[in-house]
Length: 271
Image 1 (cartoon, one colour):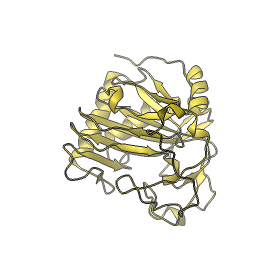
Image 2 (cartoon, rainbow, N blue to C red):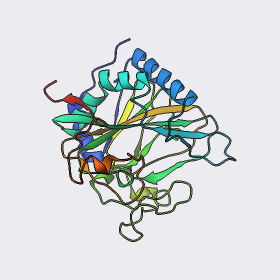
Image 3 (cartoon, one colour):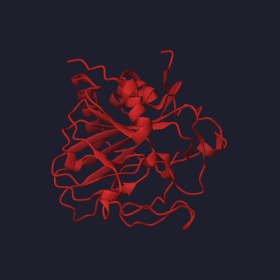
Image 4 (cartoon, rainbow, N blue to C red):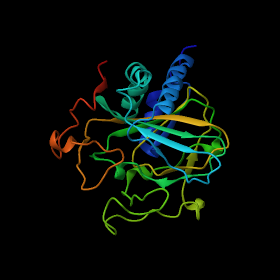
């Protein structure tokens, strides 16, 4: 079965407005099988950055891992050969797309641990606006356990990043960024968007878009791939970023384009 050809031009306008879109049927069954096989390799052989992001008394388990594309062949093949980077580039309006990193997120059946409201970019070592993350499930995801977004929140401001389980501000100095609003306490004050997904569908979102997710009663295996556009530059931090790129500050100065083997170019607008 082949993937469909979604109207990315129309979706790009929605991405610019809302900061998040769902792209239906972008990937074929064979591509989803490839990602699913890579996820199972990743679960059997966790990487150095793997972590369990749920408490010991959780009925399920929330497992995360980062930066495994160079050691898991299925991930690399999918990232380099699928339409993921092209879709990201066209949604961003970029002239070229670099890989930033891959991020595995698995919520096993019965996981209660939510993913709290947050923006991704404050946890990272990059500055610039032209960026995009893809959230690709290989299992059906009901709306109740899918990502939720505050539409338009990618336009700013940056908000204080906190650790998900203890809510500590370990990154930017306390008071240097505003705290997140209590979105769930006043949902009518925000335009929250969310979609149920079938395998082959993917959500693409800006790294500043406020998003969250509940736990999951069913198995929810997701490969997220982060992409960088034209204006992204290296922004070394004084703290540990998520993920961390050890030694990068010695090879790529602050303010430099992300021209490094860790971040290969995947697509150009002329391709």
